[in-house]
Amino acid sequence: MEGNITLSIIKPRAVQKGFIIPILDKCHEAGFRISAMKLMQLTKRQAANFYKEHEGKPFYESLVEFMSSDRVVVLLLEKENAVADFRKLIGATDPTSAEPGTIRNLYAESKEKNAVHGSDSDASALREADFFFSKMERY
Ligand code: AMP
Image 1 (cartoon, protein in one colour):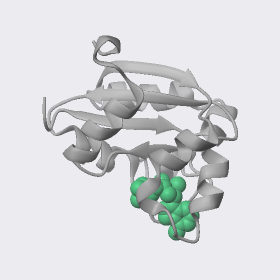
Image 2 (tube, protein in one colour):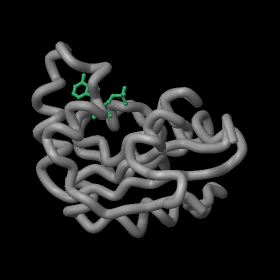
Image 3 (cartoon, protein in one colour):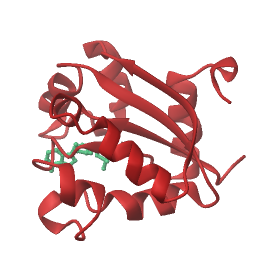
Image 4 (cartoon, protein in one colour):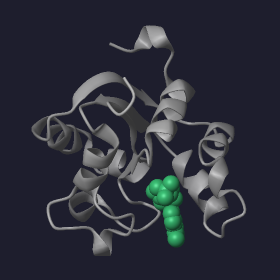
């Protein structure tokens, strides 16, 4: 399994703007399989825990507020080389430097409201998958 999964979150602003389906389409075209998926609103506490590694950074409080402000779609995606391939598909954190055609280039508003999250390593993907999904919820 290691190397084959990544965790993504379609962030509140992208959900509000109706980008769930276009983003899922991009994932499908790129060869990702959905292993688990849910539409939910994070509590502030969940968002704070999820982004714990960023605690203390200047954007942390605002990021936690934003991520818990409305519904998100949490996706567990499967594919060979999932973490690296998904990061390529979404583009740079800052949408102004994201490659044309990437998800953030197409659908992000700003560094904070950057449409999607993608795990940054296999270890993060495993931890983040456990954060959101029980083993029974994965297919
Ligand atoms: P990362 O774990 O690097 O993806 O960062 C987590 C999230 O924090 C990013 O997806 C952005 O939403 C947000 N973020 C990272 N850096 C900044 C920044 N300099 N300003 C505002 N938000 C940021």
